Every structure is written in structure tokens, then in C-alpha cells.
Amino acid sequence: MQCAGLYGNDSAESPLIARVCGRVSCQMRIFVLGAGATGSLLAQLLERQGHTVWCGDRDPERARRFLGKKSRIAVVAVNARNLRGVVRAGRGCQLIINASASLFNEIVLRAALRLRAHYLDLSSHLTRHPFRAEQMRYAKRFEKKNRAALINAGAAPGLTNLLVRRAADLVDRVDAVHIRLYESTESDDPISQWSPEVSFDEAVSHPRIYRDGKFLLGKRFSELEKFRFPEPIGAVRVVLAAQDEVATLPHFIAMRELDVKIGGNEIDRLRRWHKQGKLSKSRGMVRHRFPHTPTPRMVARLIRKGVLQNARFAASVLVRGEKKEKPVLLRTDCAFPTLFQIRQRGMFTTPVAYITAHMASLFVKYFPRELAGVFAPETLPAETRRAILSGVRAHGVKLAAKSTALKHDDEEEF
Image 1 (cartoon, rainbow, N blue to C red):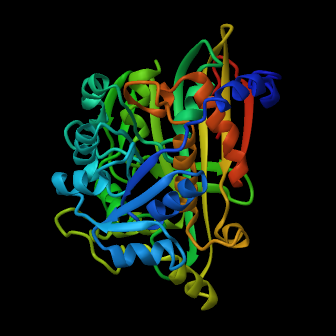
Image 2 (image 1 turned 120 degrees about the horizontal axis):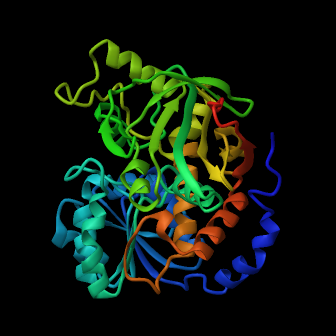
């Protein structure tokens, strides 16, 4: 049974969006650390927004291949492990973005504080505490500097957090949150849609879950479930994944349960290697299983040779709760541009890098410069969150929201 009007009409939000659009973050000097598939595209998007942008990377020549020969964006050599080097490379910036591995979050956070700059990153590393984003430890320091740090500002996490918060605001109580992701590549050989280091780290890490109000570590590739994504994807086997949404959402939104699962041929391949004992921290990252992320020119060449036919990335966010003492399920499905659709836009990048960079550019566009402290996407002001969600569709993302009334004893069908 559909619950009419629970999600409302986007046009009803237009006055609010108009007000926040009047406070779009003005042009800034932005230093992007990490010019790989995502960082290089993000830098180009920010330059188009009118910002002054330069990049830092440990391999400037490879970074230049991602940016393209025609790009005028400067690239400086910098080791993300070297705090002084990061500070020196970012001197004069108003915003520093960590688009490199989340392993370096705390180094870049400290660099931002020394530079008295705002900060943004795309994910957490969760080494100090498995259930709380390490960036939150710097909240008081950013408050003292009167600067804002926006964390996990990509697609998943990032967009997924915003969608959970939007649904939570529409119900009186949140019982459970389920995030389902899909990632596939139509290729006979492994092709990294994301940084191979990040992919390996997620593959060998234990999934973080929140059950009965408690944080737990799950088993890798466990809790197999059949989940139905919108067509043309359809029914897919999904398993628990080591995602970062669990490290912030339960801290800011009252709920009893939260888990994230992922499916697709990429995860199927990792699950098979795990069963064969070929995937562990002790064995290390085997390069032929986790190849370097292809540059735009390499993507174009793989497509021409027929090695890479297409790639997809999708997300579904389900929030089960209670509205006016009646159980309800709010579901939002996100269909991101496929590799084929991205090619039609004249670009050669993977769907994951594409949507992560575009989401980060929206977070920068509406960056909360008037705030001080550390903020996860779900803690941003309501008008800012709505403005970001309103801008998503302009980047080829299709959002489909649905609300369903449940019987008290029913278990919802995915």
C-alpha cells in the first residue's frame, strides 16, 4: 500500500532551496590531495565552478594522465604521509580536500588546522575506533579555529547518509536502516572502479553493523540475502560490506538497526577469493587481483578493444519506522549513470569515480563555511541537505522514492 504524500513533492522545497542557493559557497582556493580517478575529476568539476584549484599527488606524471594534457590545473609532488609536505603544498588554500586514501585523513585534518583552512574528505578509515569516525576527534580543534570539516562527502558514504536522514525526518521513529549497493563491471579481467588500495582494505576488513542498539563486527561476506534492485539490475545476492555509514549514522539518528550490504560481480569475485583463502591482510594485496585504476585514456582503450563493455553502480536506502503509530517503510533507489551513459557525456571514467566526484563537488558547492566543527552529511543544516539532493539529478542520477505502509507483524520484502 502506497502512503501518498509522505515523501512530498520536490517542488514544495523550492523556496527553501532558493534561499540556500543564495548562500552557495563563494569561489575558494582549493587544494585537492590525491589526483587519481576521483580526485582528478573532482578538481576539474571544482574548476568549472569557478574555484582556484591545484592538486597534490605522490606521482605527478600519473596525476597528469588522469587530468589530461589540456588541463591547466597545477600538480605538485607531495607525500600524503608527510604533514609538513602537505602543509607546504596546500599553503594559501581555503579548503583542503583529501581525495587520497582515508588512511591519511588525520594527517590532512592536522594540515587543515595548521593552514586555518576548511576540510573535506570522502570516507573514514576507522583504525582508532571501529565504530566511530576518527575525524570526529577533531571537532573541538576545528571549532577553536572557526573552521568546518565535512567528512564522508561522496556517494556511499555521503549521498546515502543524506537519504537516510531525509527519511528519518519524515517518520516519528526509526527502527531499522538497510543500505544496499550494487557494483558490476562487464569485463573478463578485474578492473578497479575505485582505488585498488581502498578496494583491498574494504575486502579484508570486517563489516560494521548496528543491531539491537549495539555496534558489532560481522563476518566478511556473510549474511547472504537476495535483494531486488530496480530494473535492469533486478534480483542480486548481497552480503555484508565494510562501509562507513555505520560509523556516523547511529551516533546522530536514533535507531535500533543498521547494516550495509553489497552485490554484483565485483563482490562475487572477492567472495570467491575469500573462500579460496586468497584474500587476507597477511597475504597482502596481489596486484593482478587489484590492478591500478585505469586512466581515462586506458578506459577508452579498453572499450575500443572490447575488454570493457559496460559498468554499473547503484544504491538503495531503506528506512523502516513508525509514522503516526503506524509502521512504514521508506525506500529510495539511486540509479547512477552507467559507463555507457558516461561515455555519451564525452567522459571516460568509471561509474563509482564519476558519482563520487560529482557528489563531492555538490558538497563543496554548498559547503557550510559559516559553521565550525566536524560534520557528517546527516548533520548538515536541513536547507543545505535539500539543496545538495536537489542538485543530484543534474548529474544524471535518478532518484525514485517510495513509501509503503506495513502491517504490524509484517517483515518488509526487499
